[in-house]
Every structure is written in structure tokens, then in C-alpha cells.
Length: 183
Image (cartoon, rainbow, N blue to C red; front, side):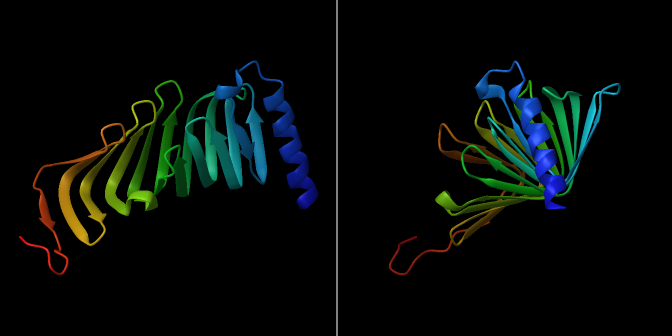
């Protein structure tokens, strides 16, 4: 099994090395199996799939890429999806759609975003990641926990540049004062 995995990695590595993409746009792919359907322009990756690209990392047990192997335009992932963005945040869910040209990903089905550097956790029905704009939007039963404080809203927006969190729609929250703090 290790020989097959090594051969697969070498094959994918060779294909990626022969690409005409600039280094900043290249991606690295590892998986236990890869099927490349040149006619349909679909790449199917199974088991222990890890895709590393400019905006971050995608991990999932099943991934399909659409377009030329050297230039995948869209990626779909299923089952236990993990996205690690270039800010170090970890976003999990059951389904992912990533659109390369837009620098956009939609993670759906019980998503969770964890930002350990900011003691922040956001859960929602779905989470949109705008890599180029460096912002995240979580919608549907959205909840944010920052430290010991907790808020609920229909939509939670995180803006990296402004270091801002915005909550929209039926906002409810609990702020726990520390001992000695005044209201």
C-alpha cells in the first residue's frame, strides 16, 4: 500500500511540476487514490486527501476537481471536510465547494470555525470563506463563542483586515464579567 501511495504522490508531483502555472498558483495533492478522467475533465481523489494551495489546505476523504489537472477551476469535497485558511483558522463541515477564480469556498452542513489565536469559535449551518477579501460569513443558526462570552445571530461576519466581528439578525448574547469588573 505504501508503494502505491508513493507512486501516486510521485505521479501527481510530476504532473504538478510540469504545469505552466506560476508558483503562487500551484497546488500540491496527496491521496490514496486518484482517477483522472481527461475526457470529462474530472479528477477524483479518495482517502486521506490533502490539497495545499495558495489560500490554505483542504482535507477530506473524497474530493472531486473540475477542469484540467493542471488548472482545477472548482473543487468539491465530501465527508469530514477540514479547511485551514491562510490565517490559521480551521473550518470544518461535511461538504465543500471551492471556486479558484473567485477565491471563494462554501463549507456546509454543521460548520465550525476555530481561531485559537483569537480564542474564537463560530458554528453555523454554512460558512463562506472569501480568501481574497479575507473575510468569513457564517449563516443559519450561527453562534460565536469568544472566551467565556457567547452570542447567537442569523449571520456572523468576520473581517480580518478590520479585526471586526459583525452579527446580523436576532442577535442574543451573554457576556460574563470577570470578578471585579463593573457593568
